[in-house]
Length: 432
Ligand code: BGC
Image 1: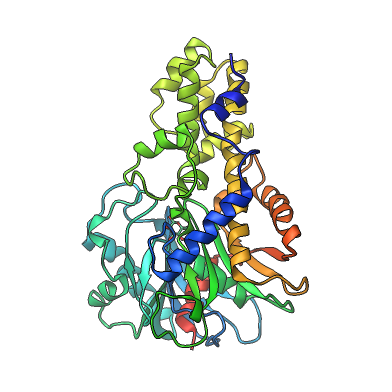
Image 2 (image 1 turned 90 degrees about the horizontal axis):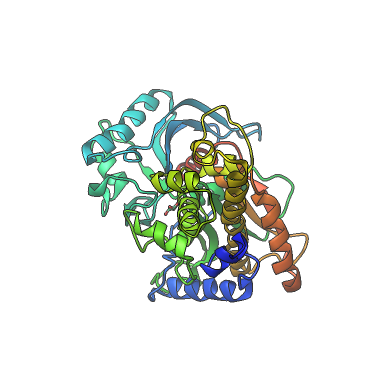
């Protein structure tokens, strides 16, 4: 009988043997095609937002943050004296459409309800909106939803300019609604709080429910943007859509059960919405191959879903005080040990793939050639920081060092400021 490691590899789930150089080259090819407007799995969306503008200070502005799981809103003030950014009047709820279908009226009612609630506290009537989904950006700050990711169920919103739709439903109307992707917001937030350091280039990276990277590009390199003025802008790469990568049998089985089968191939291999689901497919396939006792096999085959945090806590043997479904499935200690050995590589692979794609984008910025001016990679997201069974920050650093040292590229992994999406959305709204 195969070992668990042989079983995983035979089904295409590999980590050690991943072709790092080949994948970096594949990412780079897709980036260039995306920028040129040629067919590519990387959307490479020009955002018309540059981090180099001046930001209005001491002005409270309303911000919304629509993430994969949560929705937050409040006001943000960036003080002129460099003191801590003020985030006030925050209310948090569930992202509309995350658990079940939501109509467009109910969807916008949540958004506009928060704008109305925060308006009395805001000094500036514009709104900054961090919208963490693939959206085309317009030069005047609006965003048109291209598709939902993270299994959100609000189909009518696809194709709509969300800022304009909100404005239609608001009276009085905000002077402007600036919609930015969370990766762009993270990049802007990182830049807004930097002190006494000099970076040659910037990346905003999210690894939470979903994943994505934004970086700063020279406008002249964005071939698909005709008549772009000279300067720089953030590119929302939508890196989670990258498709030039082989999937394992487990990824394929998991993908078939998603509402957007065939989409977001890379995201589905590394982000929090999917790692538990991949683990479940590993367990089911392993159960059929005889890796578990009969009782565990029956229980695994009946398990309908598995959250990433339950799988992570189980593999890390961490008790978070809530019942973990896997402890009921795997009762026998030998089954538990086997299950951990089979599922931990799902997280290890995710961490290594994370590093590979970050390396590709760090190289793409062209920065970091001077060790005193590294590329700043500002990172946010629960999967990156909170996964227990493996340390994403450690693996990513180790892998990046190995991949970038030979190219003489310096980089810095920076923890983004608290509530980076809200801060970044405020920066975007307050950029002059
Ligand atoms: C979305 C991106 C977003 C990322 C991180 C992905 O599912 O397509 O727009 O930046 O998740 O939240």
